[in-house]
Length: 185
Image 1 (cartoon, one colour):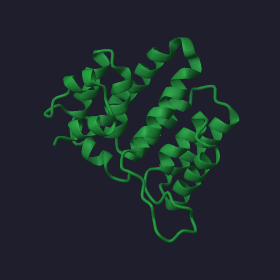
Image 2 (tube, rainbow, N blue to C red; image 1 turned 180 degrees about the vertical axis):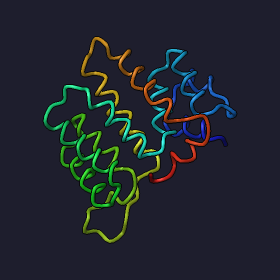
Image 3 (cartoon, rainbow, N blue to C red; image 1 turned 135 degrees about the horizontal axis):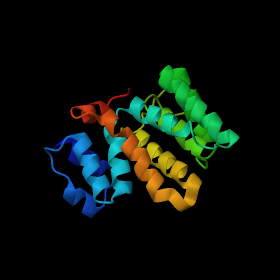
Image 4 (tube, helix red, strand yellow; image 1 turned 120 degrees about the vertical axis):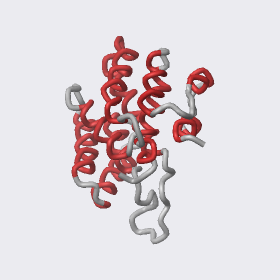
């Protein structure tokens, strides 16, 4: 099964969006075709899953830099950015703990979750048996954060979401980004 089709299934793309995808498409062409068809939410989902996890979080951080963020959102964005710069387990765990303690109720919590769910364990730090996150969990947090960020200007929500997706298209390149999307970094 192609990475495009697998990613579309994992992320629950709509039937209309899934029908537009072809196994031979490059990641960039697949996301662009969904954008062109006005399927911005499905384009966002596919993009988030096809990007390598670290790229997805870095893209969120880049989008957040020019947004009017609340203090909690800035704190979550800062933890996500710290993990992007230094993808250590301690930085990942700090982002995960921040998101978890905030109950996943803010943009900052979802940005931190994108980093926190990138690998490691979701179990409490003291638990010896690791509980690895599902591979697509970073993509799910990325979608939530991007939608919340787009909603900061509610009357421009759809346009902002499409702009965020378009901004990240070059990160997909034209080749094997999908394969990297399933890796930890």
